Length: 446
Image (cartoon, rainbow, N blue to C red; front, side, top):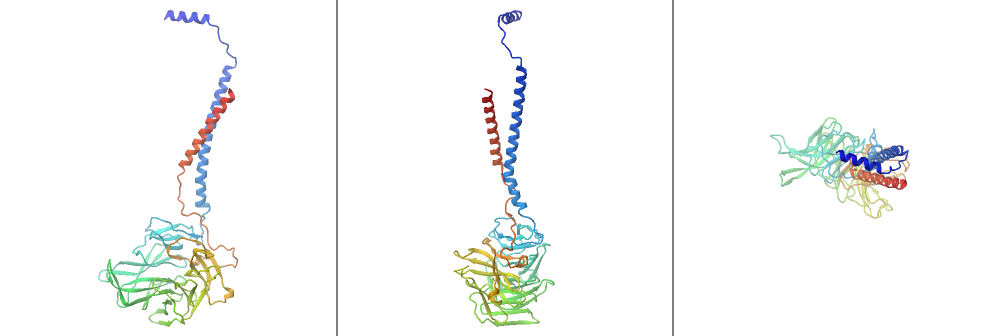
């Protein structure tokens, strides 16, 4: 160890010392500060990149779900109707006032919230896979055909009309029974314009098994339900398109006659139609005006919509050939005013408005010079059993710019999107910027 120390001292004495600048320490300190500053800048760049990535998708999607989809306190009809696809049907039926109801492609009964435009799939108790589903004009109640096991000692099957209160979630069932005491398969349901009465039509079933349903001969039935009491009146009749007015007078239209009925005590009036309608049967739609004077009927026509009065007269509302050169199928949905009908129009290609849409049209009992035809909604998915809360349509102000529906935005957008891929790209970009700055700094320092 002593020899090694002696040797090192000898080498040190023989070597000429290297020159060292006086400011070397200060230059090292400055380089360290610059390095720290570069690290801070890189961290800030990464944070800014990640934040920008989240804003690009996250904030934009939030804008689509909230700011552009405000709650409408008094309710409104949406500007478009979409098939929501596979929603999870809920047995919590207290969803509040609805603007639209329909049966989706998934066979779920779906209602659209009148306040925020959200879609709700309902697990309706005892609802069959097929059958009429009708939303009340005020959007508060939903009527549908039901079938269930009958009570002990009674018919094996109980069928009829169920009325769901969308605010409370309560379901009231009103059985439908033929004159011979057999259950009636309800095929048609109609609401009064004041949402106070429901009318139904159907046919008695003689045999009902999993594989067979045999109808009674002459077992057609017509019924009227008073929702304030839950009581109903029924009449042996035919099957057809059914509706009811605010005085509880049901109107049943078939291809050959019109039947008016309120109760057994008041009797029924059956009048032959002065013009035979080509095809009116079970499940077809009808809608009676608030005054009870006219009932619009879907008869399958492609050039006009028939309106029937209590005397058997048939008035037709012809379609504009410039709008629909090849005609269109028109189905009544309800009355927005005493002379203004909301209808679903299915128009073929080549029409002014192709596909399925909603339109307001004046009834043909008014002077043609005052007729109105107004497209309400163009974007409607191919759904079944569509019904609309017509009370939510505002009174027309006479201007074409008046908004009759509300754009709730993309209410079917998911609550969150996967933005991890974009965040990853942002981090990679920040690292690339950092490496570029490092290379540039070395070039500048030589």
